[in-house]
Length: 82
Image (tube, rainbow, N blue to C red; front, side, top):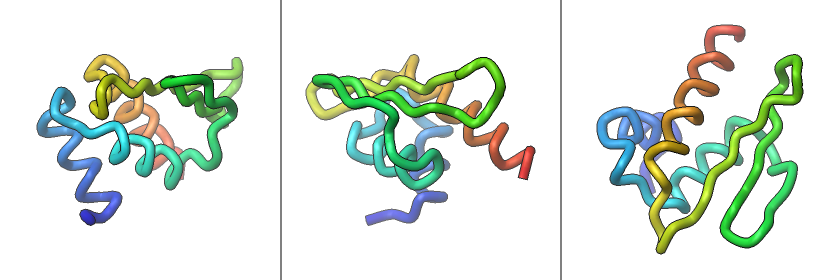
């Protein structure tokens, strides 16, 4: 199994080719326990003002590309803020 950093690089190279399990593992590792799980959706709360959230969804074992991009943006912000 690739490392978290390896999975993040894979997400940056090809956001349309990410397994949902990999995306969930990255989110669990960096964002903590999900705020809510409901069916195929998992929602993570971000530590910023305004109650921002990251929503990821399982679609036949794959992550949706439009949901991978906000995860990458949140990862960049977390790392920038230290």
